[in-house]
Length: 379
Image (cartoon, rainbow, N blue to C red; front, top):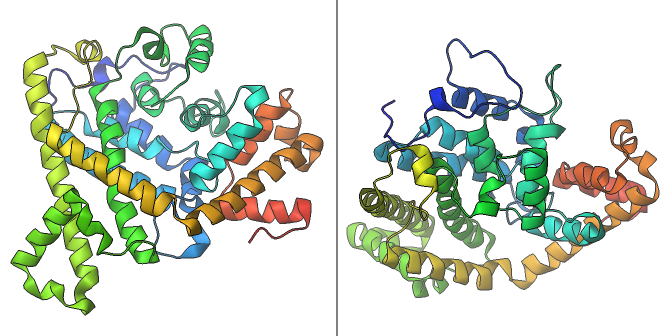
């Protein structure tokens, strides 16, 4: 793999928190990716909500399929830019490991429950998963990933939590939130690929669910441009029985256009900034970007999805029920920690132990636990 001068080189990694010998056949970033794929937290993503709950249909995206789509898009952009594909893939596959059951509703409910105990941030929780909560190795907690992968996982972080992380790990992954520098270009790419992925698959899932109609999307320029292109090349897609193919072809073209736009816009910004190393790229404004026109269209699509899908009454009603489950679980475990597994119940910091336990649950396990502890089925 030919790397650009501004890419992260695994031979120049800032290393792991616990020293380990190099693998004979894999780079450090490949090794990170493999550890993530084999982790318990990664497997649980298959039963964690993206937008639609797992029981609502077999074909809706989950956190796992979303993470795979982010990794695919990330690698497609990384290669022509000369960035490190293995690092991009590792970050993409790990970025949602700390997400709660029931998607953002679960996260919001857990944060509300933890307000008096430091709050809850899913990006910080993803870092906790790979740094501490995974228990696979005899010599250390967590997965002992490289600095560069851990840096990319911590996409957002409050200043308070950044200060706490910095105190525990001076000059570590939280330092950039205090000195206002950027993460690696690979991490910046994953942030953008995340946005591209969920915009596209939420259209697909929204239409599949019946909550969004194709006719509504005609008002969204980013979608409508490529729907018209698809119909111009394949007029028979206008037939009602081929509507699904029209949707797929439109989304495919929309994804390709965004990928090519990011590549072109980023190549231009890299040429202007001319960073001479991966660390030099951290010292300037974010370099991974859309063109202004594509950024505006992407923003308009997000606004459409927020109004017509994420705030749809059917979705909102289900998410309110999910929030109740998380709140009830938190109260039950706080009142009786012994209801949790022994290793969680024995921890001195009970609120954080409860948050860690709930955040690690899948949707269906959280539902079963809620029924066991309260005697009420939540749906």
